[in-house]
Amino acid sequence: MARSTPEKEPGRLKQMWQVFQMTRRSDPGITWYLILSFLVPVAVSIVVSVAFFGGNVIGMILIIVTGVLLGALLVLVVLGRRAERAAYSQISGQPGAVGAVIKNGLRRSWVGSEEPVAFSAKTRDAVYRAVGRPGVVLIGEGPRSRTQPMLDKERAAVSRLLPNVPVHVLYVGPDQGSVPLHRISAALGKFPRKLTKAEVLQVDKRLTSVAKVKGFKIPGGIDPQRMRAPRPR
Image (tube, rainbow, N blue to C red; front, side, top):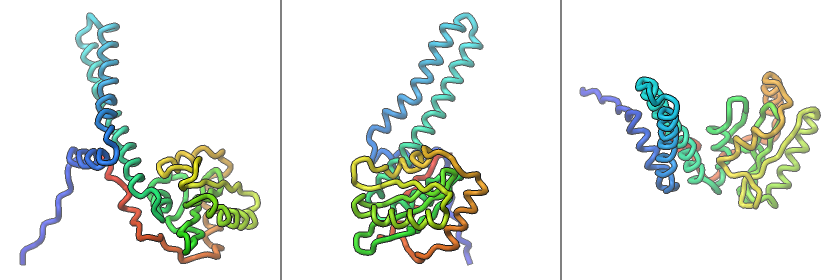
């Protein structure tokens, strides 16, 4: 019986090309961003090499090579960030999008779940929770006018259970001033830190163990893995 050979993973260059192609479909300006990201460090290195190492060929070569390496690194950084933003834009506005971001986009200092802590079956609005060093952050998904009552209820419940832990609120929806999906992680990082790493785990464990609302599933069938663009390695 013939053995099936495992499918070979694409190489790094092919992965980068796939990420670029995916990103360009929703972000046509990515090409110019990448060109500038590479050319600016190279141009600066050439100017510096000529100005300060005009008589030293080895010095000029080393500076220019450094500029090329910095340009290549900057291209990878810009491509990764724009690709992530493009991936988020594909699920923006869909029920469960915030859960996908919490599952895949939070920093390691945060603990969260893709399952909502409150959900309206009628409007498909939801409230998600993340726990980090700033405390507990409740994230409303949907119009603010509809998620506000759910957020107030969850905030009161958390405050009764953990009166000494700060509780913050974020809004992700169509309202002006709401946080875009790709800015959730940055918005979480702006809150002042109040807890230690050990306290973060204790708070999350406490909230999880006494949660009264269980069994919520991501509405609409969003697969959190689909929103994650492959990153160049």
